[in-house]
Amino acid sequence: MQPDVLAFDFDGVICDGLIEYFQTAWRAYGKLFTPETLEPPAGLAEKFYPLRPVIETGWEMPMLLRALIAGKTDEEIIAGWPELALPFLEETNLTKAEAAKTLDGERDHWIATDLDNWLAQHRFYANMLAILQRSLEKRPTYIVSTKEGRFIQQLLKQSGVTMPPETILGKEVKRPKYETLRLLTAKHTIDARNPTLWFIEDRIKALQSVKKQSDLDHVELFLADWGYNLAPERQAAQEDNRIHLLSLDSIVQKFDTE
Image (cartoon, rainbow, N blue to C red; front, top):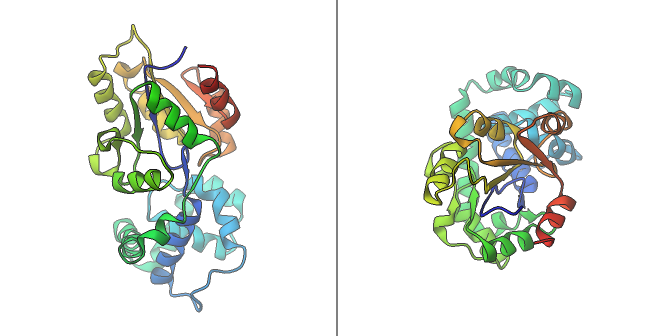
């Protein structure tokens, strides 16, 4: 069965933003911790990338760099995050909100002064642009993301995919993803007797939040195993009767058999 309506997350499902995440985090680190050099230590990015899934909100990004520079191991970080980050936040004498504002400010400055360079730090996962384009041709297709919609629009446009602005529901809508799915359900008159809305997301907590909404039992939930998640989260998806674990190979097969 194919969905009548399909909703994708963006970062970690369609777009790989790890390079941008690291560079923005390092810029914020420079403001928060005033390192001796503006160049990140060799190998820091490679340590940061696989640990990106532990981060839930922006203030944690430079703290993850601080933890790695302080010698914390992957195991310690995965087991103890975000509590492990709090002593590093205390070093800055800032609140979480203030640290997040510093990070956002660095990103905003980068975007304002060199948008093309910022856009160039993003990559697309193999086949995902083709899958998105194919879905757009067959059914109502949406992006439900915490990234600003205008940047999603620009990243897609420069890659040859055009989506109507009203189908990109980004950070600016200021509502939980489950509420957006509720609105899409109402817009397309989907109910429990017609379970044809699929949501593909790489963060299991986002999927679990949808699962808690009793009126969204009809939404088919998929965890993208190529995105920003860890082995325990993928295992949790495999053991969950509502959440389906999805690989890049399997999503290609799903949409190539239409």
